[in-house]
Image 1 (cartoon, one colour):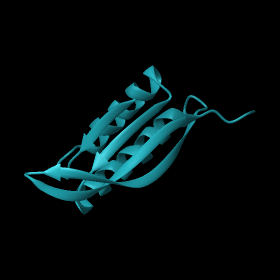
Image 2: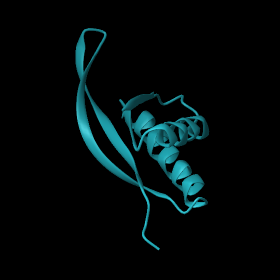
Image 3: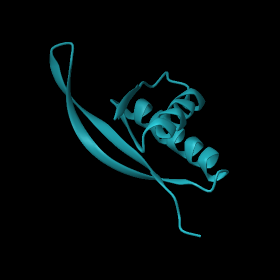
Length: 90
């Protein structure tokens, strides 16, 4: 499973393209974001990726959770978004 690290300065469109690309290789991708701005960009990227995949009659399931990461020697709590492909039955 590919892990994408998202920062507050990340471009949501670029992250969305990375999510779609990773989902085309595997059915699952994970994003990690620390801080409100980074979480905002990650969630926007999932929404953009979802819109792109819906054009192919595919959808995504996003499962949020928390992670503990070490940044500059300090433990920080971040948000983990697990994104997977969902293909609705037609």
